[in-house]
Image (spheres, rainbow, N blue to C red):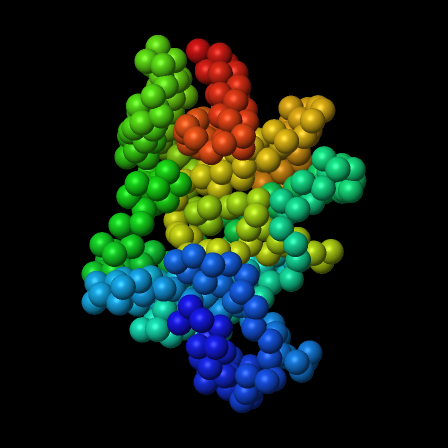
Length: 354
């Protein structure tokens, strides 16, 4: 199924359901967008009146029964989540904020068809600023638009339905339990804080951070997250991994993709992950990176929290949580610069907390 010819045959087989008419392989062009355990293809019909489609193909590995069952469950879940998010965003009253429309799921084959979203990742625009190819004021407007999309999804859109417990939960939990982002989804109050502290301890120990420094970082987290419940424990719709690379911007729309982890959870998760990525990507700017990071953060929060809905010290604790993951060793020059910037940010945060 990883071969283009096999995917072409599948796309042609289901073209009536996907495009509304039967197409043979000569009537569309197939291109690979991403590889790995899950391949992502673009299907572009020669008839430009038809939409371009993205096809996600989950690999069955060695073909074991357990692999196939997991693929089926994961594909069913991803399609159901995409459909639910599409519905709540359609009803949110912001035509300029969207997600890709899911079209067809074939769970037993690990296939998911959806319309391709227009636009370019906001990451590209931020990167171009370093080279003088993007206007800083326009990038701030783009960041504000990213924040506004998240405000629509988290605050204005209807609540995502809570799925009933099922046998699929154990399959889905495997990919979440040790993932530093996904493991927080759905947790509230004391359970959320406990999981964050546990993950921080585990990673600082695994990365062999100096014991004294590790203790100071852990103490800062315990202080910053103390009493995270009640009105402080904001809960709502959560993308699950709201990434600078997964928010697409065009002149008239903002579209978020990769929604498979979307659920209910803490509303600090998405903005903190987004801003932690901003800290990382801005480390490459040769001059004034800290100043530009602060300006872009302000623009993002003007969209996400226009009335100060987010407590910034709490938000900073979540950003620090994600940056701990960037302290991991290895990764060559990119890993070294990531560790240096993460350590710099975390050290400044610890001083503010303590």
